Length: 337
Image (cartoon, rainbow, N blue to C red; front, side, top):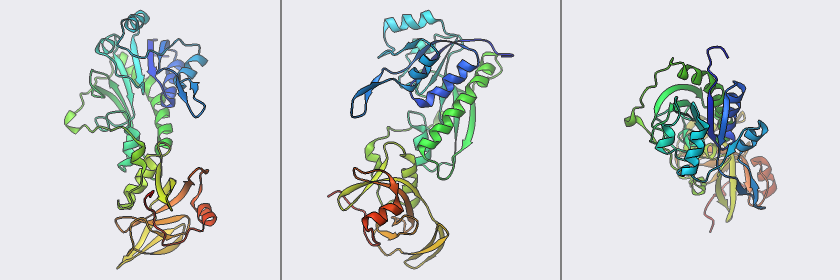
């Protein structure tokens, strides 16, 4: 721990995404005087009460856990003041911090945010990076202020988004990156080796809440947007379409390479095979069955669906779905009616 002060740290986080950062702070030898997370919740069909992943990790290390319903409470304030934190580290906690709390620690409240701020402020930055087809994202370490992800930037570590990466896969990588980033940055911050940089608010973008309704595939959209939607909403809430009035979830898809474009004809490469597609058909039409379901989109390009889930069934490869349901070319994905 050379050049590193041992800090009294209050940690605030709730989901799996937060755990590597907590583990990194523990491993670095900081004194974690309190771990704050959301209250336990009922989950699943059995309505069994489950602890948040951060609570599970904290209890494994015999750390004190606090789960207040609100931070805007005199008792909670007294509790936090008594902990006398040098710094508060926040990552995906799920609550807005009141002004008194932001001003409490000597070194401030440090937020680990999963985007290159000021892009994608808000609760769903990883989803939107993939939904928008971005090729790069990053972890921003921010000195929090009273706004939503508006604080001064302490450091940014960038990473490429892989072409086929889903939100779930990127979540896992970004969680690890957050854990790798926090300790060295925090050391430089408390030593005065970093001067935080104000964000350019005019360049800010914001993320809206992810809803189940967003998962319905609109085949009139361009092919690349549909693939990004399927990647972006995997694993939750997931994408879906309708076939013969039944819901079909779509888990994996890709954009085949275009070989040539002719009048009303498109040639694409699917798993090394050339597939000729008639583009003079409605969007949502199944136009090929090589390597999965080749589906025509609104821009007269195609997507290849490779993993699907029939209603009330398990996830299967699109090839197995074709073989098991006698799916033929010319069938059109349509409404639930």
